[in-house]
Amino acid sequence: MIFSVELVYIIMGIIGLCCSIYTFLDKANPRRLLSGLFYFLYSLTLLLGKVIPPFYIGIMVIIMVLIVGLGGLKKGQYGEASAEHREERRKRLGNLLFIPALLIPILTVVGSKLLVNVKLGSLQLLDPANPTLVALGIACIIAIITAMGLTKSTPKTAVKESRRLLEAIGWAVVLPQLLATLGTIFTSAGVGKVVSDVVAKVIPETSLFWVVVVFCLGMAIFTMIMGNAFAAFPVMAAGIAIPLLIKQFGANPNQIAAISMFAGYCGTLMTPMAANFNIVPAALLDLKDKNHVIRVQVPTALFVLAFNIILMYFLIK
Image (cartoon, rainbow, N blue to C red):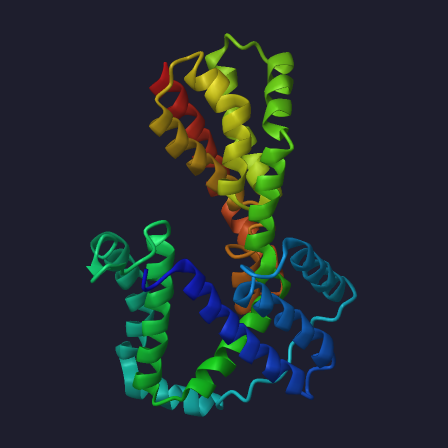
């Protein structure tokens, strides 16, 4: 293939590596060596994750955790333009500033839907196993180039801005990978079987309503623990959905999958573990209360969760 998911990770790793170098050299950062080491190790997991043995990747992750735990991750200075200069450029460019942001979702959809089976000669254009992710990566690169063209900026400026955003996100940048790994570990460890046994002892298996309630609540709670509904789904599917809802009550697997993921997303709205959705926005907006986003979302999450329970029950019934 021409554009593979591995290529996307390599590009991310190169950008992260450049960001770590700037952090190492930033004398305004009181923990520049430890902070730089954190981002350097993170970039290596992206750049060389396919060739580095898992054992050494694990050691690198442990070092990263120790750096964060010991307070070694700090922000630096980024040489940003003055507020007056930024305002002048904003007025000059106007709504054109939205073009790079709009290009990302548009090109991602176009690429994942229209280019998924396109070949150039004997080579597949996009990775057939991950067309959406590859299309997203390409869309981001095109958006960066477009932004540089609009603002007359250089690649150096793009890297510096990437570093500013990366350090604003901080330790949460590694959370998606860690949580995905946690879901795999839970599934391999047989947590789904444990859940199934507990459910069988606590609620009557003949009660469709209570099975649905426990399943949807379980999806939300496990998502709150793992920070990711995709990680929670294999556990709850193995423990409740497949043996009880599908095999015993004859539920439609497609409906169960869709609604259960929606129930899991309710848990996403209520947990700091979903850092990309809840903690990162608070950090980027410099909110004093880092859990403010979660507090605002809780009522909506509970209402939608209740709706999912009712919807699943009546669809199966």
